[in-house]
Length: 327
Image (tube, rainbow, N blue to C red; front, side, top):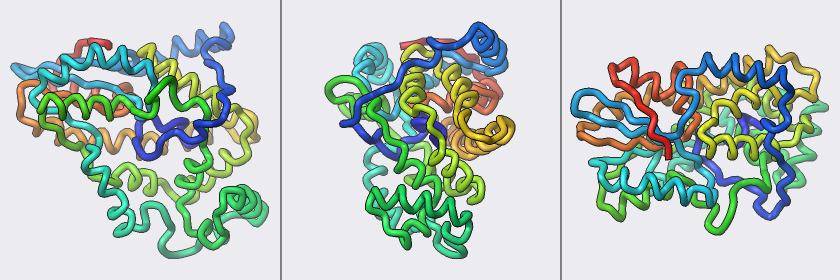
């Protein structure tokens, strides 16, 4: 479902909270062959495990914390470990602070192209007639007029349809780890800052070629693979410090019920990751390196940590040594 749950991106809260969660952890159903494949592929992922790492270079320490943007009561235990780290830090950097996020409405008004197709052919012209009819009927159920729908960015439509009853656990589940870290820093009077501008995540999604956005949207519309399974697997893997495993399983299982080649699915997902993860990771590095403080906390979506272009490997390339310090 357009890179399920978007753990890496704080755009929308998980929808459908009143719905019943029907998902189970897919890792519990892996065949021996799939388990062996997972073991092979995870070895190729740098820094595949862990949600909290410490990067050290000289007298400088950077605590890199992988977060989940939607809430879960299991975060209380995480915060018991992280609170002393945040309180003793000289500064905290988040993807976007709540103060900056409050300006999102004005950013969207001044930059309509983040959510819409401002010029050129609309979706009704770019899609096959039968696909457009399918989308129109589906979105009419959500009260979206065809004229408005024709100018909407496909990624935004897909996210609007991606709801789940598995979005969190317990009271105050809506509070993601980013929010809790930010509030703790504010109470402790630790300076906070943003790694990017409001809307940069949306800009990254809008930069995906429109034809590929449409293809992903249609796959989402037509697939009957249980979305809740993906959500539960991602969330459980996150709290077990094993998110990279769930991301690999997601790439194997998304759209498996449709007549689309796995190589094409892999291409679409790689392109998605290049825009929403890799490019933003590289853009964040100068901000992190310019933060001239002895102890820095960097709290970003957990999907930004692992991989060759993940934050941890980019810090390693800058001469930092990395040690795992899980919460």
